[in-house]
Image 1 (cartoon, helix red, strand yellow):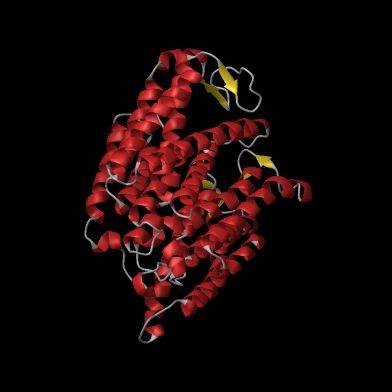
Image 2 (cartoon, helix red, strand yellow):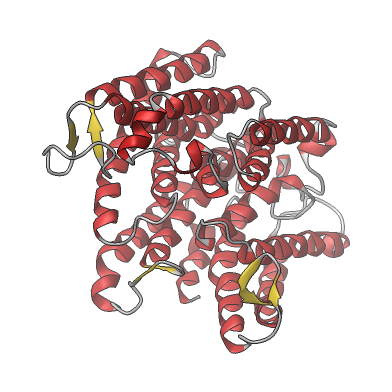
Length: 457
């Protein structure tokens, strides 16, 4: 909760400066905090412990990139309000519910999460609601309204933020293998553009009491396509039921800003599953195949698609004319960069395990067994490069960028995969390699690099 204080300085920072603050927080949590507060920096299989300490600033970096609009900042719009809302949800709502569950640990448990007592969640939500209300009042008072009585917006505006608050509370109680330090701020960031609330900027600075997705009438249509995608993936036994449900939600978020993003999702999905099934019997015999015969669960789906969906507000802003310099296309490149990086990672890993050959650790440059954390092979690397190049070429074909932008996307994918190899080996030795979090770190890293390359340089 105490780590919320830097958020109070966001109104005086540019998006790039805010990203620098979150990077400093990340470096502090990685290298300084373990020496100052070793009891906080702990490894726990259930509670995540040290990993959640690291994920905290990573989630903030993703929020800044998702809403760090260059044009909105130049126009004096409050680009930072959604970031502050997500930051408060991470620091306040999450912490208060955790405290409430410790104070009232007995009694009935939530049906979907046996680790959360109902009374504790209600107490935590009530505790968090008090500062949330006063922060919302402050934000509303500082929101720019061009004409008329500002307080005519008070009831619907506060109601919209109240809905966001309930979304964050619900997200904090959900557990499917991904730390709530990621799920809570992601939920807030993704939900803000989808329904009326005063945190969402509009052209001219007015409070936007609607959503482009639903106002244009195509929201329900793309929702149907997303649900169909999830159902087919589940029936084909490519995803578990939870994975299919989350995959449908993330597909909807992507298509809500640009329907053709579904093509990139399908490309990643097809290439990844083909690579997973290539040489499956050989990988199973060696004990290095994916669990459930390659059928991905909700945690794996979020690790693959979550960062891309997290970046969609930047594209919403571009559609409103207050996004990054260059308009819609740079924002779209930020969205697809995590998918391209994850395509390279999945294909290179699966083909490398199937083909075999010499596998080396990038940290030590020594041979390691196939399937080892951080290990890379020549065959896998070449296959991953080819797969990511195919998806990148489609972006160039659509005119979202020239070949120089395509080269930049490939360079980002390579850099993200090198980072993933280093972090994967480092984390596995320190008990921090839990679930899909290495993939999430890698894809957020790709999104940040794309934001720096295409939006801020």
